[in-house]
Length: 101
Image (cartoon, rainbow, N blue to C red):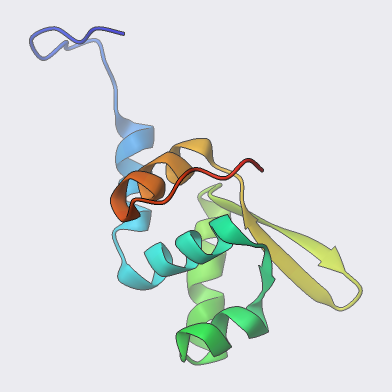
């Protein structure tokens, strides 16, 4: 795709929204971590050293924006990254090869 001279017909609302969500360091760390393996909330907050409530709020936002999804396994919910654009952005930012989902 070739973009020429500020094409007025192009809309980047979705991409801008993804960038806004990923713009927080905690959410960026969560997405980067979930790209290598799916995790439950306990493992995420233990790895980040943050309170469970804080991590849950960030997970809820990532989930509401369609960047991650949760899969229930008994009483636990395991999260993984499902948004290909978010995967590509994070991979580019941290120099990590994209993982197949």
